[in-house]
Length: 192
Image: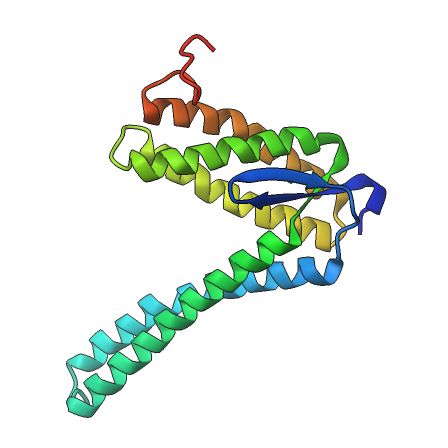
């Protein structure tokens, strides 16, 4: 693991971002990473299961018992996806995000910008920049998981690269938020 003195943890709590310089717990970080990967993998089970049900629907197997079983299994898989996704979100929030201490401020600012963009996306779903905002949010999620994974596998170079990617995403998130809300920046200053 990177040295504890080189690592800060970023936490997001009710829309506020705070940094903490206590050393990250590798077990908690591993659990957060594992739950996120498992939830992402299980999400693929829903379309695969639907495809199997559709294929079997056109065979002689498709009786009343088949449909009852298919509905129960689909509901169970969807419930598992929702529970795993929630558990992953809680584990990630509890673990914090391990970032290099020298750019903690930049990543924290970028996190605030992404949170503001997420709020703007909720209220301006049909705005012109919404697609770019959704793409940026997906990239942000992927980069945070890659950052955590790099920290866990002790790849210092990749860890710093992913942290810089997150820091750079803040400016783009601010631009997207401005486009969504019709202002130049989230605080309404078009000249900034």
